[in-house]
Length: 340
Image 1 (cartoon, helix red, strand yellow):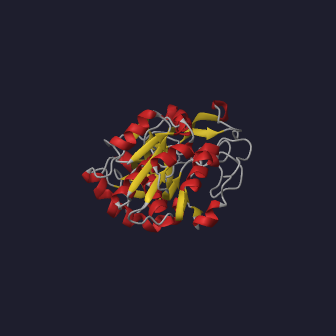
Image 2 (image 1 turned 180 degrees about the vertical axis):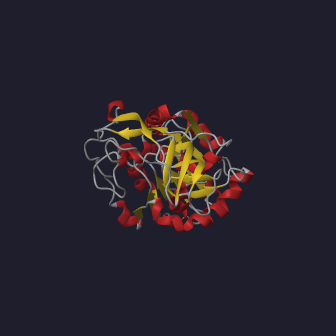
Image 3 (image 1 turned 90 degrees about the vertical axis):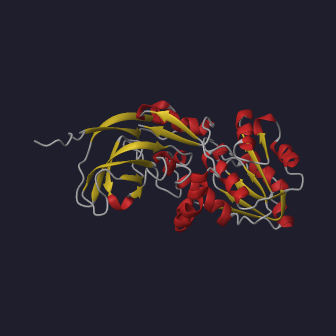
């Protein structure tokens, strides 16, 4: 008689029912049950332990042409996830291994093992592979060091600085020799966190007044690098404070994701002429070649405590949608993660 526990037959999953206009609403989604597909040759079945929710997912809810395909209506959405392998018909991955993959927004996932990356729960907590040592961490690393071409002595401004990406950008900048790092965030509590825990030299609450004025006060001699997670008035303020040869890396523009009308662009783009400044957008998917270097350099910083991180954990698949909406509202400090 076998002691092998019976495998589940049903998994709960979140589906997109209609494409949101403006802010996503509960009726645009459903939490449904689906039969678990048993893996075929080269495939694995994974029980998810942690799910990622990220701002970019708002774009996938729209039918508009973008850098990644929109979510399909009536089908399970996707996102980063990490979990334990229950069944494997693939070489190199065994039952009991833990893997990082993109079959999120669901309890169980069956997929081709080539889409999985093995992770070590002994080296770091599983949740970190969705954040500080995962895609968000690589986003910070690649955007700051490659796209913005950080140099020792640079003055760096980061918007959305208490978020998963922004908090790492500021800390990596300091570890790499930036002379001054300034962050903006949406609450006085987050501002305090940036300075006292993450080591930013200055930070401000963008809700407390003009972003341009607060940035000029925090960086009276201007900025050399701006890492943009917000867009809008933050981008305009950064252009206004940009020094000669300044670089702006555009990672995200969360301030406009739910707009129903096009947002006006910065009114001061002419400053780029006199400063010879550069604005460049980037996607982390174009920089996966940096992954080994990123893990090799950042892993020890995390292990030693030189690079600190926060996670906002929401419990339960039933709260996955609310966790995602919380990211859009700025409820999270650090990486927003759903624990199953």
